[in-house]
Length: 232
Image 1 (cartoon, rainbow, N blue to C red):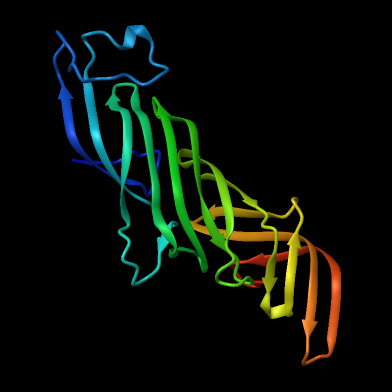
Image 2 (tube, one colour):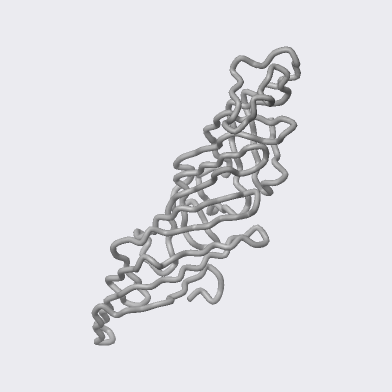
């Protein structure tokens, strides 16, 4: 049973275990209304569609790498999911949706370990996602943990990163990099494509035998790394 939500462009849904209620005399005994519904909306005359299972296809901006064995359609847990004259309501949630090497954030590796969205009558009441992303200048085994506040109905995705204890920047011969807490990553969605920009602050140690150069605790500010040219 395909479901399209017009105010969430790019997202596609397929529902299973669907119940269509057209009876004004009584409701399905298994029907549970979402939190926030008024008593007047929950009487035996309720008409609508309820769903017990749902899979979701992410929009094109959440790209998966070619050759990835991960499906672009993911199964989600659902809670109190229904469609009626007031719109789409319910809770969508998923964990470990795709790993770091499968996700392609326009050139940066990224994973999605959590997706959580609460909809009430076509409005997002709460939305978040979490996972890891790897900047292009770091080692492959040094991803950054991220969390994001999301509202797909407004194309709103606000990311924050958890600064690790240490990183390395191979292109600078920086063997030890410490980021300060005001380092951040901004993602902007335009034309169904994410532009990512990291603004980094901190200290680094540089050791280059080729250049005979050693720098300890060199402070830096406003090191900008992007997934669009110019990349650095």
